[in-house]
Image (cartoon, rainbow, N blue to C red):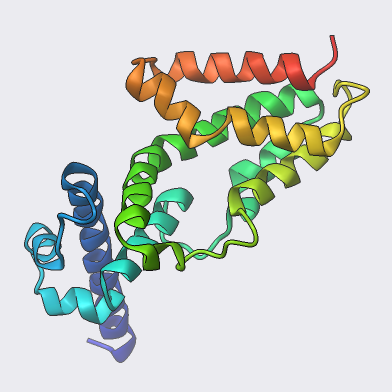
Amino acid sequence: MSDVKRTNKRAQKAKETRQRILAAALELFVQDGYGATNLQDVADKAGVAVQTIYFVFGNKRALLKELVDVTIAGDDEPVATMDRPWYAAALAADTAQDMVRAYVAGTTSVLERVAPIGRVLEAAVASDPEVAALWPHDVDPRYVVQQGAAKALVAKPGARAELSAEEAADLLYGLLSPELYLLFVHERGWPRERWERWAEQTLRAQLCSG
């Protein structure tokens, strides 16, 4: 076997191990809570030695940080939300109405992944103040994403004439929040299709003319 093949095989095995650990952590954090889950539990679930988790992630806080970042993105590729194909495609829509439709669909896919881990993160911050320090406080990344979408939307045909980018960003930030998604889908039992239809109709009424 060539050195390149051996290197590729090792890299693939390391990636699969990392994915198993993250999947195990997600399941246990959601099921039992961040505070009640220790790294040995995660190691047992993932079928690895606990030392492997320390080697790959460093500690439990770093594992949670990686898990949140990967869950938001949908994969472990180092690509920011605003550089993702679904985001770029939504912002490239011809009209405000088309953009709202595409943007709600893409955001809903993110919310499906993020909402459960969001509750885990809230509980983790409450039990371990150092967890909060893993993310910067001066800028809310989710609001930055909505700001970018709002600026694109207000410039499109079909946007409400008096709509400002600031108001549009606030509406996107509030109506497409993990908290509201959890309320309707998890607590009230709405299917994804109903949530997506309601979010699109509500945002179109607020953001678009006619």
